[in-house]
Image (cartoon, rainbow, N blue to C red; front, side, top):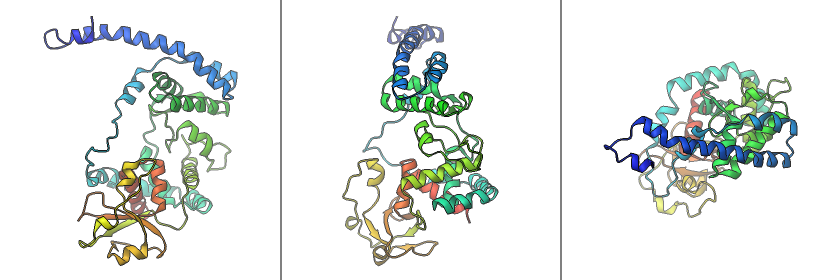
Length: 345
């Protein structure tokens, strides 16, 4: 009897009937998943993963329907969907507790952080703010078995190339000596303090405490050094602020500064930002900082008014785009910058 047929009996579906209807589907998924695993194993071997690692991991895997369910629940991005207000998001993510915990982490790790900043040029507070946003300073790092989750998502097929590559990268981590029992993270494969994907870990994870291991699960220093290295790789420019709050005169004609280009990545995020202008040009338009001095006149910035005209606006430099590389969301990047500012006050 089909699920749709069951739903018409008495206007509801008894729990037992639902379980009976779902069982054949789950069984089919399990059997299909097991039939798919040799393909993953062959791809891993072709990518250079050792036979020892493949044989120790692949036969232990079972299908995880929950991660597939979570992936399918992800909202699709619609260019016509209304943009919510930034203020409520900011209140949740730049709150008293996160600022206080960030300041404590900042002070606790100053010795390591100052060395990382000297090496990378990335401000200590930015590294701490990313850590705070991603895992609340290491408190929430996920509980899913990564090889099982990634193999299940690769089998499901909607983003097969992405999850196959991340599954293979996870096996390469084991080849490098990462213990199997450390491979725990989010349902989509991110893990550790910075919430790196396995491929990012292989490229950018760094040893920050000098013990020879990039342990982003247990070492605060390694977590922060890895975040700093990510930002260097993404193009962070030392000595340039991420951005700052500004007041915009009511006379500013937004049509003259409207963005006329389309970004190949995260076009909706970048589309909310204005044209790029120098600080001198913004000053000539009557834009003024709310709480800090202007950077150099030749520093380029774009204007973002997340809550519309009349509310707080921000001038954003190229370093803001580096934060977007970590998570392509204006709300996320703004909150990281604002949290960083609050942490170092």
